[in-house]
Image (cartoon, rainbow, N blue to C red; front, top):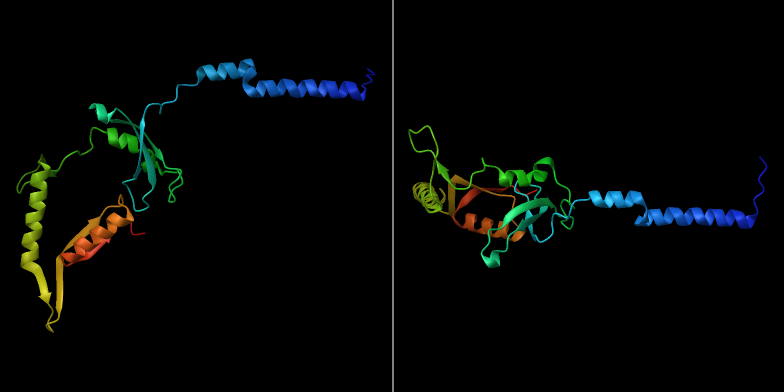
Length: 199
């Protein structure tokens, strides 16, 4: 078949093809309509976004927590979605598998929500109040410090050391909070101090 195509006909045909594919790509075709009908509504509509730090390891990745419920109206906020913070310099929006599963951890029925204690001679844990837990910790620390505090060394030099107790801080703190924690712990004389986020 011998088909002669002038330059004008070639440009018209090519232009019509480009116009057709452009219209389809812009959403004027039936495929795009079918796709748009299957897309679910945006799940983060009407949620409150809060920035936080992942609680797992010393990397201290930034996360975004989305919750529904207006606290100003007395509603309880329910966390609906957690994702990596793209503006955070540590992780730039990425999360490890544990960090990506934070929502499941928050919603888990096995998650501890209050202090537990196993009394001497007991084989099970029981729930106690925060006040009781903090009082018990404070009394134990005071008793240990009173019994083991070293005010002066053998040469008579003031050292103010408390070597029988250590302190471990968590990774979900800012630099400022970690520094304030360090100053408070050192002021008691504790030398064994570490922060999980020290990397």
